[in-house]
Length: 77
Image (tube, rainbow, N blue to C red):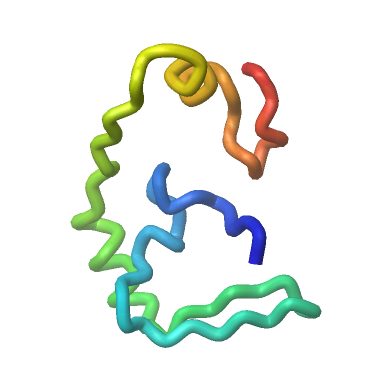
């Protein structure tokens, strides 16, 4: 799997997945499913906090600040 969107880093549904959760990957169907109830996913997302990232100065900081997510083309905004 190369990329999943929306990203967990911005609070997308994949942010609810934790180590040990059972997931199913359906490549032909282009789906990723986690074996959790909707209630459990909502509970986890309600307590989710964006991760703090220590991004060094330079090109990487500019990239993170100026480039959209891969779901939106990973282009300069």
